[in-house]
Every structure is written in C-alpha cells, then in structure tokens.
Length: 292
Image (tube, rainbow, N blue to C red):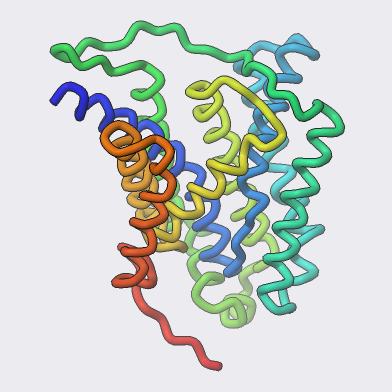
C-alpha cells in the first residue's frame, strides 16, 4: 500500500506539471482552433533563460524566474503576431505546419547557442519531506500540486468573471459576432497566447526542479504529453486539461511501477485511444457539428 500511495503521489506530481502545460494548449485551441506545437519549446526557452540569468548575469533565482516568465509572455505574443496571425484565414493545416516548423527552429537555434549537451538546472529545493505515517511527501510535490491547481482556479475565475475573460469566450464562440460587438479580437488572441506562454514558463520551473537538466529538446516530451492530456480531458476546456493531466501522470507512474517503464508511454497512448473511441471529444468534451 505504501508503494502504491508513493507512486500515486508521483503521478499527481507529474500530472500537475502536464496539466499546467496543457492549459496553454487548451486555451489557444479554444480561441483560434490552433494546436500550437511550439508551446512545449517555450518550456525550453524559459529554462535556458533561468540558466543564463543565474550563471551569466548573476541574477538571483527569483529574479531569473521572473525574467523568464516575462520573456516567455512577450515571445508568445510576438510568435502569434508574426507566425500565426497572417495564416488565420488560411486552412488549419497551414498553421499546424507552421507550428511544427517554429518548434524545430527553436530547438535548432538552442543547439547552436547552447550546444546539444544537457546542462544542470541551477535551482534546487532542499526542503525536508513531510513524513505522513511512513509515506513521504516532498516539498516539490506539494508546491507543484498547490501551484498548478491554484493557477487553474484563478484562470477559471478569470475566464468566467472578468471582462477580458468574457471576451475570450465570445471570440471562442463566434469570432465574426465578437467583431460586430466591438471586441478587439486580435488583442484577445494575443492575451490568450501571453497567458499560455506564462503558464508554460511556470511549468518549466516546476519540471526542471523535478528533473534538473536543460537541453534543446527539453520541451518535446512534456509538450507532447501535455497535448495528449488536453485531448484526453477535452481540448478547449480548462477543467479538462487539469483532469487529463492528472489521469496521464497517474497512469504513467503506476505503469512504470507495476508493469514496465519501457511500456509506460505505450500504455498512456493506449488509454488515450480507448477514451477517444468512446468519447471522441475527450472526457469532459461535447460533440459539435461543423458545416462542410
């Protein structure tokens, strides 16, 4: 039982990170119907910014993290403006190919600047774990879960209660009608990319604290798994991203512990396939009809 609970905590820890990253995917898709495959590489960008801030510029860890979040937000807005906005009226496949191209470009530029070799992440947390009757809960796990769930609730409140959040929902529902009602659609879409990129930067911090190594391909695997989490829970839905992230993390952790670490990814993808066979829109998604 202790082993099972330990693996369950590990799964919740990893799942919280996946869920936090998945929020960026689901927000962008909900607004502009775009799968931003470059989203995972913003994790890599944020991680390298922290490394540069601490080791090269001599900044404190807190200031370096704040700098990485600000730069990620600005980069997300510029990326939307330069790479995706000109293709908004083009077929979706054009935007998808562009997103993949931006991802590959970011990874190759990072290799040219920092080399392909991984480097250690300079921020570590040396806080003693909590002993809960023989079950040890690390401070990193507690911080990750609390921060991820807290940000999800704040984002849900923002989208449902604020003027900008209501504008996001209007743009997501019908862009043309939103324009007629005086909503600045381009500004709302830029805000969506900014929020998603900021969440990715925070996810980068939590991921690198748990796995303290930075490389140009850092964001590839967590980015793909976060996308799977978003699809599993229902892409376009904030609660769906969180639910999918937790399910994915727990399934991955239990598969590594009880079945095979080599088969864990295959088992996770198998769960996704089974869910989509019965719920094509994800666990919390609803079927929609599109005119051809």
